[in-house]
Length: 190
Image 1 (tube, rainbow, N blue to C red):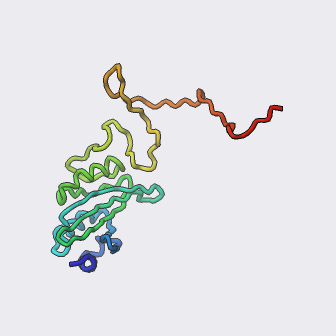
Image 2: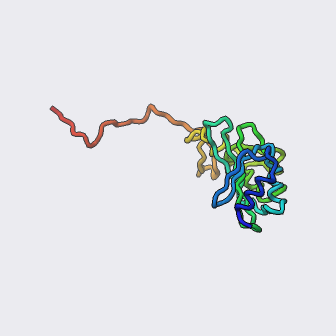
Image 3: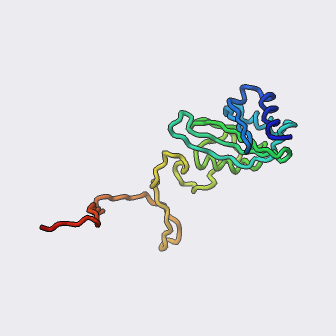
């Protein structure tokens, strides 16, 4: 069974309210859905005879600050039986909570934690939603476009205390000297 058949069959079989948009490419199929229907759609893709998605490859996020629903959460799935890839995308904002799919795909637990840690998109009743890539004292979510590049605290190893310490960043401008003269321009002293 080829990718085109799976695409056509899925489009004809899925309830229309579950899928906002569907695209087919040589690399796989893409489904855009609402966060309310995410779990049902992934159940269908995993359990239906003509899709049989067994593997959640990963879950990733993208931040588009100019959009009303600024985050996109992308589920990359693989059907080893039919050798096809399916990408399911949902849009979310800061307060939207998505359904966890760890009960369908056990490997999704780590990826959902990472999406929450990096972007702040949380899951409803996730069994283990805690930071995975950043320190527990970290404020904010590092892959959001609105996080300041310098951050708020500096983390460094303090040799006399023999431990890692976090200190507020101090940026004093008045003690810096900026020479705006170009070294390539010739001065005429005369």
